Length: 298
Image 1 (cartoon, one colour):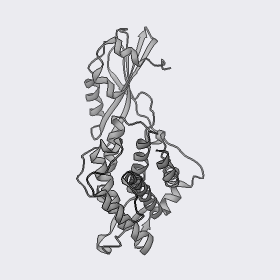
Image 2: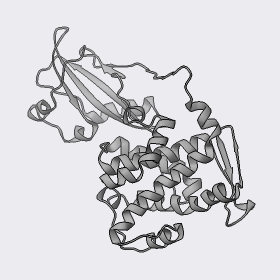
Image 3: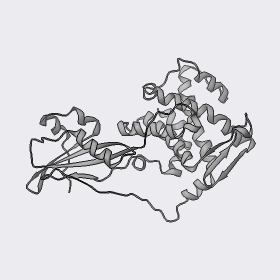
Image 4: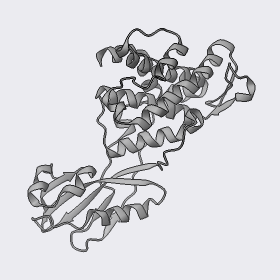
């Protein structure tokens, strides 16, 4: 993985800098959005916002003007990722056409993160193949229009009739997807159910570029729920009931949540547990809950 990090170092740095694609920016930790009262067991939901303003920030102007560079850099990161993968089976030429031909071979060996997600491999390959002529048009024939952060570009191989429009949001998603795959693949970021859904949502949003069937992933939403209780044995309601409540609150989104349990003595918290969403369906005893003991929140 060290070789891969070194190979994509500049492109990875540029895209992360332009869009602030740190793990915390993409997957921030939020306060407890929904709190269940210890007495009534009624939920109270509070909305939270998050904004980061930097006076004199160069990024918005750069994104507005540099759409072609962002597209080409995202493609280059994808290109070097596939080149690194293909080198496992022998020397790889520098021509894109050679790499694309090698990717068509059924027995290409992918790292486990990709091998276990054939839906992701198929769409990354399609993004690479379909982006290559657009990249050529930008680099070699300047057959593009960049306006207000969006990019209108035609395939250099098919002419103006094959023009595609990528919005500023599309370009961000392309960059975000490429950086995220690299970070998950290298183990710099850990994958979980929410982040997996986020990947699926990203590739669905790039359907006009990869042109494969939609996965049908609606926008994921992750939150944290606090369950206050006086019961030291932590007899909690069915977690699916909480899931239904949150889904009603966010009807257009695919909701997941982590659960923070706070045990109260009167009004004083005496213990707390933090349960990741993936674990919730499998916990049914106090002994298992205690494995997830955490700091008592203020």
